[in-house]
Amino acid sequence: MLELSSISKSFADALVLDNLNLTVAPGSRTAIVGPSGSGKTTLLRILAGFETPDRGRIVMHGKSLFADGVFVPAHQRRIGYVPQEGALFPHLNVADNIAWGLDASREEKRRRVGALMEMVALDPGLASHWPHEISGGQQQRVA
Image (cartoon, rainbow, N blue to C red; front, side, top):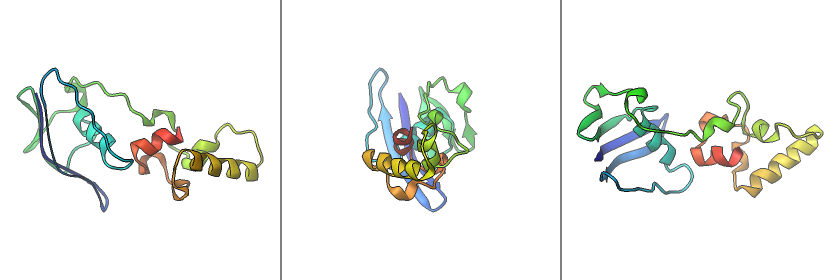
């Protein structure tokens, strides 16, 4: 059994998870769905132990993973996790990640990046953001 109680997480001024409660029965399957930026990747990273919630409690098979000063690190949780951001260069912004490998003039690259961002429904305002500043779904679309 996996139990999450009152999980909340913020990044700067952005509240990503707000008092989330979830129970997953042993042997069951659960899908986490929602729009881009709704906290799905953050929730999975919290479960895996790569992020810590601001507050709340996580219990798996009766053992506390996060609660009242208890934090079990990722390598002791026995939870598999395949990150989606691994395909991006962390030192390049969104536009430069998209433009990587394009053999074209600077102006043609700029035009192509804009067209590709539009094709995958990425807000043009994200072009100057770094991979860690955008949601998991947005990272997938950049990749």
